[in-house]
Length: 247
Image 1 (cartoon, helix red, strand yellow):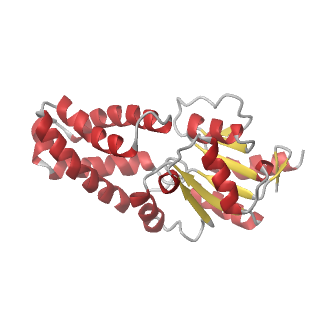
Image 2 (cartoon, rainbow, N blue to C red; image 1 turned 135 degrees about the vertical axis):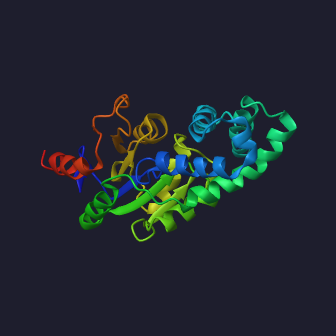
C-alpha cells in the first residue's frame, strides 16, 4: 500500500478515542463510580459535576505524563485525589479514596465496549490491504489489554505496543523505534500512524519519519501542525489512502 510516497507495511492505530470511544466509556465508568460511592454523592451534587471536575484534573495530568513530567503512580493517585479535595473532602480521606477509586474506575472502564464509528470498517480495510495492523497506546497495561479483549479487538491487532510495557511514552522517539523493531520493518517509511492526539500520535510519528493521519475526534480539534492528512470521520480514511495511492 502506497501512502504519501511511502510503501506502507504497518498501520498503527492509537487505541483510546481512535478505535475505542474512550470519552463515552470513561464517562459511563465515572458516573457508575459516583452513583456507587457515598463520598462522591456527598461532595458532588450530580454525576455530571463529578465528571467535569475529574476530567479537568485528569486532562492536565495526562498532558504532564505524556511529556514525561510525572510518572504513572503520581498520575493515578492525583487524578482522583485532586477532584475529591476540590469537592471538599479532607486530604487524608481523599488520598485513601483515591487508592480505591483508581482500581474501581479501571475495572468499570474495562467493562465498557463503545467503539468509535467506522473503526471496525477501517480495520477491515487495512486487513484486506494485507498490511500488518498494530496498536500503539500510552494507556496502562492493566486496563488496555482488557479493553482490547472486551471490545472484540484482539483478532484485528497483529501487534500491541503499550508505553506501560516499555516505560516510554509517545511522543518519545524510543517508543516508535521499539514499535518498528516489534514489527520487523525497520524503515520509518514503512509505517503509518492513525491517531487523535496531535502531540503524542501525530507529532511523534512525523518526527519518527512515519506517515500520519490525524483523526479529529471532536469538532473543535485543529489539524496537527505539519500533518498533511486529517479526517473527522474514520470512514473517510480508506478513500484518503486510495486517493494518495493513485498519485
